[in-house]
Length: 221
Image (cartoon, rainbow, N blue to C red; front, side, top):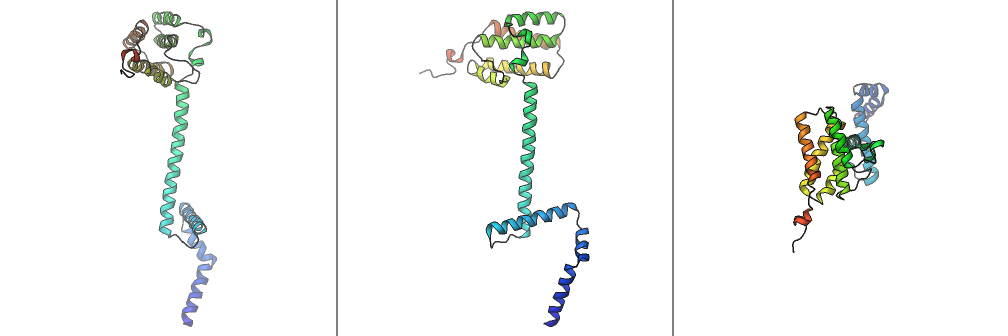
């Protein structure tokens, strides 16, 4: 019994020596030391919260892994939301940015005339811009939408769905092309521009009827 006690004391002395501790620490890299510290912190926290219940090392490791995954997901989600916000801010300009200072009093007919002039000069990017603005002003004049500085094309699409769903779908396609050409600086081919112009002029020359009038958006009883 005495030999066992002496052996135990000897082991304790060895374990508590600085040389042994330095040897143990030197054989762990930074991540291992960090991991052990986190597990130790969690185990102490668990004991503080739940008193006599002492978590095992395996449970502590599992919880740390789960918490780390949750934190990483939260970080990536935050980054995603920030990136999406700035992309929306860049691509969906508000009304004051859409209409330049000298254009604020223009009618949709003024923009159509300007689009024709830009088309003759083969500046199809500017022509596309003026066609889209003409359509936007036309819808506003008809009371289909209400323009606001904070609204996006998606907001206008939502408003148009309450008037005529097919028109809303066509508008959304035109809005996406507008963003790609004006903000994304996508090259405009003559054929695609002619299709764009034809669609815009058709929507202006043949105003859509409300789905409510056609019996598509309300009760018929």
